[in-house]
Amino acid sequence: MKLLSTNENGIYCAQGNFYIDPWKPVKHALITHAHADHARWGNQKYLCHIYTEPILRLRLGENLNIQTIDYYKEININGVKVSFHPAGHVIGSAQIRLEYKGEIWVVTGDYKLYDDGISTPYEPVKCHHFITESTFGLPIYQFDSPLKVFKEIEDWWKENQSQDLNTIVMCYSLGKAQSILNSIDQSIGDIYVHPAVYNINLAFEKVGFQFDAQPIFQETDKSLIKNSLIICPPATDGSAWQKKLGPSKKSFCSGWMQVRGARRRRGVDKGFVFSDHCDFQSLNQAIKNSEAENIYVTHGYEIQFTKWINEGLGLNGQVLHTLFNDNDEEE
Image (cartoon, rainbow, N blue to C red; front, side, top):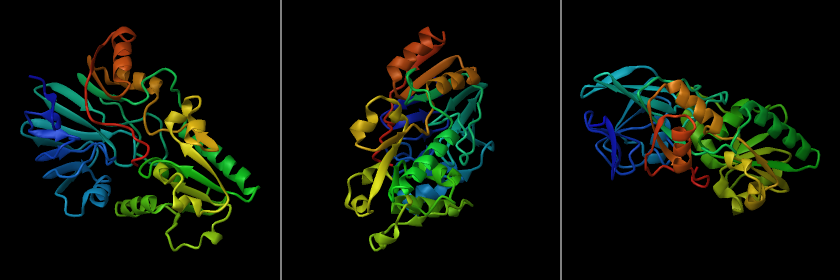
């Protein structure tokens, strides 16, 4: 019997009697990171990285039964050795390593190899079985360094300032928002955020992070917001909140901006190609670094990328059906 399998509740370890990122309520859930498709309400007990805890409590409830763990620390759950390792996806994200009777599995959750400047950078973990996402598992997806993207945002912000316009950047409230705030040149002007971003920033303050950005609430005097950078989730696009921000240009920050026509379909002035996921080249590199013989592909272009693993890399690739997704509107 395999150490990991899937059932109606999620990815299950029968020996350890726990799930990893379950999509239905279970007794014991190990959580790779706090995005909504990986961390859900209703589990009796959660195990996550120490940086993920405040976000789980913010999103799922203060009274959760949460055990935290730091990177690299090993614990034993019913004979299974469990440890969390940096995934580089968002602050606190982790790959989960499982070892039982000499067999090693790694569940990546979501991850990226590029250093975004604030998430603990991804580190390869050698294993026999490697479960990987494939959100951008096609060769067309080739991303630049986030540092280059941050410079592009700064230049566009300055250009908009010269026209007395605000600059709206729509991106995930958890992940890209903190990366941008951490790396953007704040001497350019004032930076504001949507309350959803602000609340996540406040939660991260509990574990030592600090983000300098002012929230825009309903009662905020919008006339004071001029030539500013405004970071907000994609769900605000076209909302009353966004329409009250005054003369602005808006952008969308996502790996999907790599595809021709994506900016036009989103109805934005600018598209920045920046993702918290691996591009095609990085997925290949991660698989090679793992030295795994068996690769299980989920979350994205599963069929196409699995075919590439088998035919292009000459490894044993299999599709793993899960309920994870990458919905820009949710975050």
